[in-house]
Amino acid sequence: MSYQGKFRVWRGDVDGGDFEDFTVEVNEGEVVLDIIHRLQATQAPDLAVRWNCKAGKCGSCSAEINGRPRLLCMTRMSTFTEDETITVTPLRAFPVMRDLVTDVSYNYTKAREVPAFTPPEGVGLGEYRMHQVDVERSQEFRKCIECFLCQDTCHVVRDHEDNKESFAGPRFLMRIAELEMHPLDAGDRTTAAQEEHGLGYCNITKCCTDVCPEGIKITDNALIPMKERVAGQKYDPLVWLGNKLFRR
Ligand code: SF4
Ligand code: F3S
Ligand code: FES
Image (cartoon, rainbow, N blue to C red; front, side):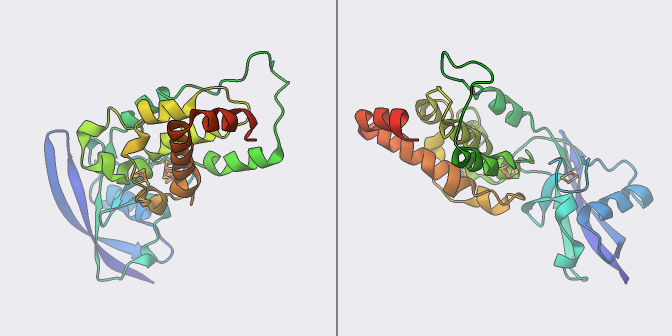
């Protein structure tokens, strides 16, 4: 079964743009990215969109569908009614390059600001040992496909460009939490999270968790535990020291 679907797609570049309306064929089983590809093939050959895997694994096709951050390749057309106009826009928190493609370099800048895993002195390669429970804890965070939908939706930067400098965003605060929970990481992640990466800006609205296509519980399992560790450190340095040395 196919039908003619109504789409409203943002077209433009760094100098501005506007919506363009299309009526396009929709077939059973298709996702929004299929429709964007059909538009390129039939009506708008220069429509810019970023994608790679079409399987929800590369994190490239992030955009906003009816104002909600989504992966284009994982959003089924069957979630909409046939008479609905579907609006597709670029990620709002990042500068537009062209059409649905945004410049996500903010995220790479923030990634570089997080110091890498730092093993304790005297422990050489091949000598790292950790409990299975610690391995499993970080597995959830490792599912991240770096789609940056969480970064796009977080209100701290979504409408406040000036916060970008001091706020790493949920994806990278989660990375810091992963390192903080790693039994062999010797870095002081709690102080850095608060003072350099803007953990205090997060008021646990959980919007990041809501949009994560991997279903990672960013807020409950990374951000809130990180805040608890910062609070422990802040109010009682001895508790913090004890936690750091004997917690695991
Ligand atoms: Fe995307 Fe989830 Fe990773 Fe954020 S945490 S970048 S929403 S996969
Ligand atoms: Fe932003 Fe997620 Fe915190 S949406 S405010 S980082 S809970
Ligand atoms: Fe790879 Fe959508 S194309 S996640």
